[in-house]
Every structure is written in C-alpha cells, then in structure tokens.
Image (cartoon, rainbow, N blue to C red):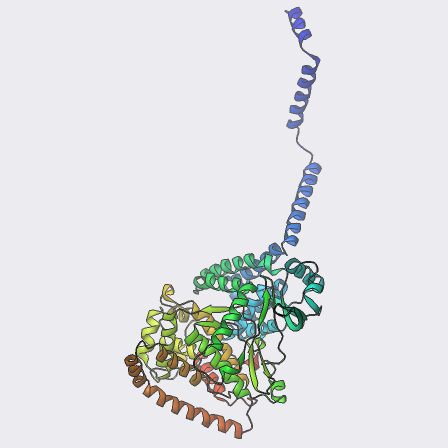
Length: 564
C-alpha cells in the first residue's frame, strides 16, 4: 500500500506539489487574524485616498460638495434650534440673533446663488425678524470679485485664445462692478461694418459670469429645493410648493443668451408702445452686441446709479420724473406687456442726460424676467381697480380663484398700503401665530399663481425706491391708472370699450380725490423742508407706519429701511 502511494506520488509533477503547498500556506494565512497595526494602516490609507478623492472632486467642481455640506449643516442647525431647542435661549431675539449670524456666515462663504437668495430675504425683510433684516442687507455690498486670471480663462473658453486682440481694442482687467452671479469689465469693442468694411471702436460693458457658477448652480438649486421641503415640515409653513418655480427662474438668469433675448424684447416693446407716453419715450435699454451662456457684451452708457440719491440731486436730476419713468415702465410691463423685469432694484437703474440734455432712465441687467399669461394680467388689473375702490366682492372673487383666504392681507400685500375693508382698527386681540396667518392666507396652494411671487418682489422694490426719494410721486395712482388703461385696451369691441369706459368713471373720480390727497401731503412735506425724504413725512412713510402697526398686531416685525 505504501509502495503504491509512493508510486503515485512519483507520478505527480513537482509544480503541482509546489502549488499545493502554496494553497495550504495561503489557507493558514487567512485563518490568522491581521495585527491591529495593519488594520489601522489599511484604514488610514483607504481613508486618506477616499478623502483626497473627495477633495479633488470637490475642487474640480468648484467646491460643490463642501458648499452643499456647509449649507445643509447650517440650515439644519437653524431648523433644530427653532423647532427643538428654542427654550434654551433667554429670548427669541437671542435665538434670531445667533441663527441670522450663522446663516449669514454660510451665505458669505458659499457666495454665488446663496448671495442671490440672501438678497431676496433682505428685499422681503418684513417677513423676517429684525435680526435677519439688519444682517442680510449687507449682502448687497459684499459681492465676490474674481481674479483676472480666472476671468481671462473663461473669456478664452468662450471666444478663443486671441479674443483680447481679435475682439477688443482694449479691456480693463479690474471690474467696475460685481454681483452675485457676474462681474462687469469696461472695454472697447471692435465693431466691423460690413457695408463699408470699416472697424469702429465702441465702448462696451463686458458682463462675465463668475467661473464657479456653472458647476454650482444645479447643486445649489437642488439643496434649495430640499431645504424648503425640510423647513416646510419643521415649521409647518407652506414653502416647497413654489421652490421648483423659483429654481427654474433663477436658472434662466444664469444664461446670458436668454438675457440678450430679454433685453431685445423689452427694447422692442418700449419702441412699439402705442401710448406714445412722454415718459416711456425717455426710457432706454442698452444694446447687446453678442452673448454666450457665460458672457454678455453690451453698450456702455454713462450715468448715475439710482442708488446714489445725493449724487442724483447734486447733478440736477428730477427725482419725480425719474420715479414716474420707473413706475410707468414697470406698470406697462405688468399690466400690458406681460413681460416683467423682476430685479429692478436701484443698482440696476441709471439716470443720464442725453446729447440733447434730456433726462433719461436706463434699465440694466435683464436676466430675470417673468412672463404673465393674459388671464393673470386681466385678473391682476381688475384686482388693482377693485382695491382702489375698496370693492370687497371684486377682491374676494379674485382671491378665491387664486386660493387665497385672507382678503385684507392679500389686498395690503398687492398694493403695499393698508387695506381695512370693515373699518375696524387692529388691536392686541388680533395677534396670531405667523404660521396660522400664512395658512389662513393660502387656502389652496394648487390655485396660487406663482408669478405673484416675483411680481410682489418687483412691487416692493418700487415702493422702497419711492419712499427713499421722499415719495415724490403717487405710486398707487400711477399703477392703478395703468391697470385701468390695460383693461380698456383689452375690450374686444367698441361697444365693450364704451361700457367699460362708463364703468370706470367712478374710478377716475376716485383718482382725482386720491391725487388731491397726495398733493396735499406733498405740499406740506415740501413746506416743512422734507422734499427728499429726510424727515420721513411723505405719503409712503405714512403708509408704512400704518402697515407696521398693522403687521405688529398680527405678530410680524416690520422694520423701516433706516433701522436696518
């Protein structure tokens, strides 16, 4: 038996035996546990490689991972403090103070779209505690500025490596302005005249998107949509239903080809306006020469920003005329054109005297527009007319069709003036939780016209600027007159137009009384030396004081711009 075994083994190849020994040794090795030092070493190496990979990916995609983590951490921390930890603070003001500072730090660190969203909070500040209002207004002054090296790389990507000599006679490497999405460089563009073969040097503004925005925008908007859903659950406030609409509008704003289309469309609408308004004829839109998704090259127009009231006064501009041009152009967009500039803050407006020394208003930055369907325009026009006449049934009809429950709050938010349908004054017993107020306001979210979000933002900017200038014009009257004019234009026949005209005779009489009251307040204001609003006794100041008291009665802390 032994001899036969030896005979068998003698026939087995040496290679097989070596392989068998290796497998046997390998099996024994697997049964032996690794030493702790080796496990730690492998974990350390794996963790380091993973960390480096995530870091490299984060850097390559302009820090979308770290920015998203920072945003989610800050926003969830704030949600936790309000929902589960508020009792640990001495007062709600202390909580507001710490939470606002935490959010502001996150926004300033993340930059880009976060600054845009923070500015939206600053603009709608009255719905937020004073601690938020005071901090978030700083975001208008802290826009990021990119190095020329990064801007140069982006311009080469869009126009080729020789763009600086092929396209431009010169371009300034230091930006003259910067905002949340882009910065602007002054340049001299070579414009080729194909008819005679000449080249003309034209002063232009080169709007260049911050290089990181392209990679960050989709992730930022995703975080925004997710967080609104979380906040809706935590605070029981209706928020998520409008986040997709807001996201789509903000995404369009980052496409400068779309901005060129918006610019050219508004220019066409103003030029072809049939009203022949002397005010609209002096409203300008800069010409756009070319654009890509990330760069827009437009006409350079010298002027004074409407944010610099003192400089406007010193250089002899008529603030009353400026406000009339501003309000009428936006009223036309809202009630007639159905195409509305949704970021008309003073920094996007300049005043100038043209070659004939005639004062003009120039509208800049046409990235964010809202299209208004005909049905909405008609309803919004009728709403203004009904509010002006204190027609409760007319207001309620539209409010019901838009899923809105609280008629008085609705009317007040639309015209930004106090509306009391029943004549009662607010008292302490009317105070209620802000959550209940919002739920009462929004009865049916499915009916709510999302366009109203941006229209309300535009309305607030108009009210703010008129108040800043000392209420030189009757804002409510100008807007309501345009709404009535739009309704008359929509009349389908001469008979219908005649009926509508008779119907609006009482409204026109109300205009007369309203204007009379305005001029009485304005005359008193000027006689008391407050022509430009320093003493805050203009019409907008009176309206805001009343609205502030009304807001406080329902738990909203309304703060004057001067207090922020």
